[in-house]
Amino acid sequence: MRSQVFSRWVMISSMALLGVGPVPLWGAEPQKGTVQRAELGGGVTLDTVYIPPGKFLMGSTPEEKKWATGIEGGAQAGTDRETFEGEKPRPMSVKYGFWMGRSEVTMGQFRKFVEATGYVSDAEKPGGKTQCFNPKWTHYNLTGQISQPWEPMAGKSWKDPNFQFPLRDEFPVVCVSWADGRAFGEWLTKHEREAGRLPEGLEYRLPVEVEWEYACRGGSQECTAFWWGNELHDGEGRLNISAVDFLPGRQRKWPLGSAPWSDGFAFVSPADHYGERGRNGFGMADMCGNVWEVVLDHFDPKGGHEELLTTTEGYRPVCRGGNYFDVPGNARCAVRLGLAGPNYSDSRDGFRICLGPARTVPALKK
Image (cartoon, rainbow, N blue to C red; front, side, top):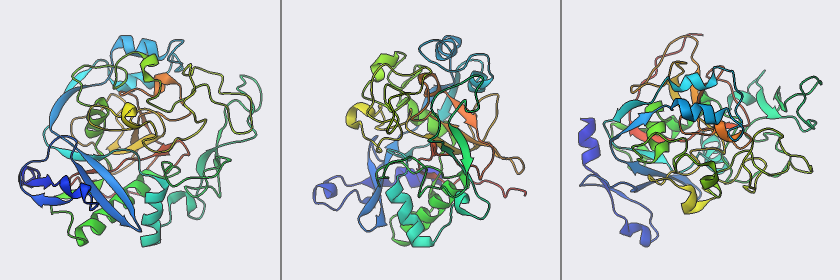
């Protein structure tokens, strides 16, 4: 039944030329790159891009892991972090087509959700905290009081992630949890279905981990560090990671491994800021860097799965892709971490929305 839903779905691109935007109709199967546009209200939209079924290699090679923890990659050697990618690349298959947000969900898009529902994020609830940058941080110490700049803060949230500069609607939303991302998807599903733009069998939700890495690799059949290949220098003008960018009001950059160019931003960059050069073969932007992206799966430290992995206790959502303050070795296609829990949030974490077949997560035990 789900395959029938996908095979009968098509977009009329000419409607976009008339200013109407992509319009879904029953008909032939959509083509790679076809855009489905959700109308969030007040002129705010959210575009998802069609990704056809296919196969790819999940994970990383020993050579890639070695580079990631070397001088150029800058990731900390001697930890378990790289083992989370699996011992070696594994063939994976995505047997259905789906749509993925071209970029992470933005401040402006998340605000429309909050305005429509009155939703209160986990960080804003009584006793809530979110991990933020401490502006008192000056440098990295091995022996001093402050060795790294991130700490949990009360009173901070997606509305104020403590960036020390004005927020913009086109920035990716941060300080949102796995639970917050799921709530956004549930609202968008209901909103679009009530408007007659979403058939049964499809839903807006967080991506499954296999969907995320498949989308990140952009259709490549090779297992490379980044979607454009293995060379970091080819990433200039494509992504936002730790680079030669100074913190607001400072003349000092993060001292550990970083890209040898300026990407223009010490913190987040606007979604899809790098345009066509920043998009992979599927048209996805910001898959590497900018903000970590939370996905639906529970974290398995032995590697990702082809099917959705869930649990009812101790749920640790997977996050993917690296962030604006991360070293290059932590912003690769294969990098994956497990968050502390479904309600954890961080000013380096956001999410990307997926439009695809419904996926069920069992009720979590408290």
